[in-house]
Image (cartoon, rainbow, N blue to C red; front, top):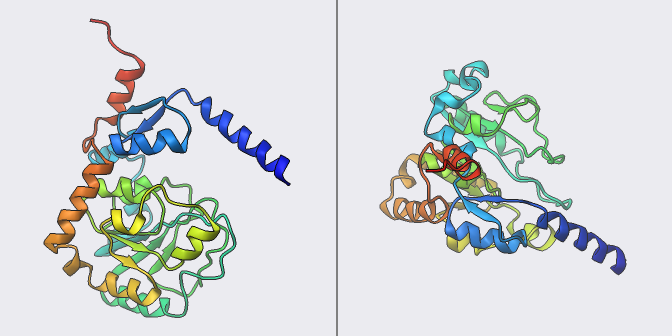
Amino acid sequence: NKFFNRFLKKIKFYSRQRYKYILSTSDYVSDIFKGAFENSNIIKTGYPRNDIFFNKDLATEDFKRSLELDKYDRIFLYAPTFRDASLTVSPFSAKIYELDRYLKQTNSCLVIKKHPWEKNLQLTSDLTHVIDISKKDIDVQEILIHTDVLITDYSSVFFDFMSTKKPVIFYTYDYQDYLSKCRGMYYDFKQELQGPFADDEESLIDYIKSYEKWSINPDYIKKYNLVLDKFNSFQDANSSKRLIDFLYPIEK
């Protein structure tokens, strides 16, 4: 009822106000966060978790070896966000067998890392080169450092991954349903980002097969770098240091 919904909104508002500081990666992101969290205590340091992209020695374990991914020539990672409403469209159909055959032929693999809250995405167990690691206790950052191409949807994971300057495919098979039934966007998704946008499974497979061509297109690279700079002011391994310096300033 209306009273209950107002009550929930108040709880949400006051919980966000209690955040002492919120980390940001750029001025553009800071402006978004001020509205999204209804909190002005934003500090631009970059995310400490992204230091790993510039210093792989920060990894807790060599998951490429322990998961036996080092036997593949290419690693594609599918890391979608969760849906907070039950949608009828599924990301994969029988066409995934076509993709599996292609991955086998090219000695590649598709690693699936579902969002921890995702319950609906299910995969058949007879795929040879599609590997679901969702149940393993692995931080996605430690897989991203070994990923050649990221496939995601509306998840913010791509902002982090773009620090590698490697290709991203946006799999937007349920775009309209997501906008109307799940969560909205803080920016014009398909206008702001560099793409490519795969609106169906067939397009996704085509982009996977042709990524070595479209990812070196000068127009793609130009747009990619513009987006990277807009969302990531700091492209280095010093975000942890900036945060520590902010929390514990050295008196001179």
